[in-house]
Length: 188
Image (cartoon, rainbow, N blue to C red; front, top):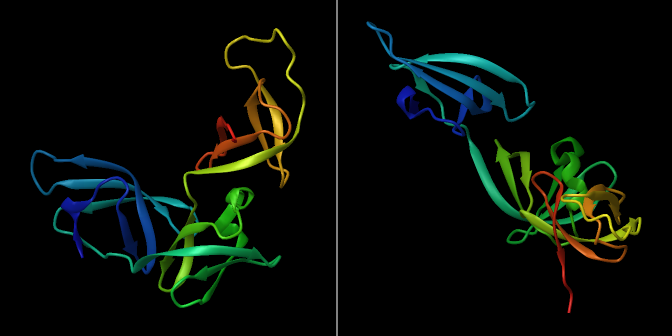
């Protein structure tokens, strides 16, 4: 159990059997009476937000969360299949939990999967992945203004914005948290 004084941004709590993360936090101490903790909470299951105010005497439940490192295996069309390296158990993760991160999954990629009551609710990929640019227009010489970018596609059809010097066949590093180009990778 947490006390209201433990509340802070990013803390994971449980309300009515559902896990929430504290998205925003405000402490208020009125002239008399108990201190108030105003929180904006985001559901870890649905993504919905709600406001909740706690008093200093309130107790808040800790969610039953477990994080395990699993290896991505394949997409069967209905779910993404991850394998536990120790027990060789298959874990099926629905596509709505993966979201746009599916474009960055590679076979045998180690990922962290967060479980709430033995049900997967969140998948965290490595921060950066390297992908080959499969389709991209050649950059025009002389277009050297700062931060000029062009569209490029990687093998699975995901489109990113890259600098003009990146060409088809180049390997680029992509940040999986926001899906943005980071740098061109020199092979050799």
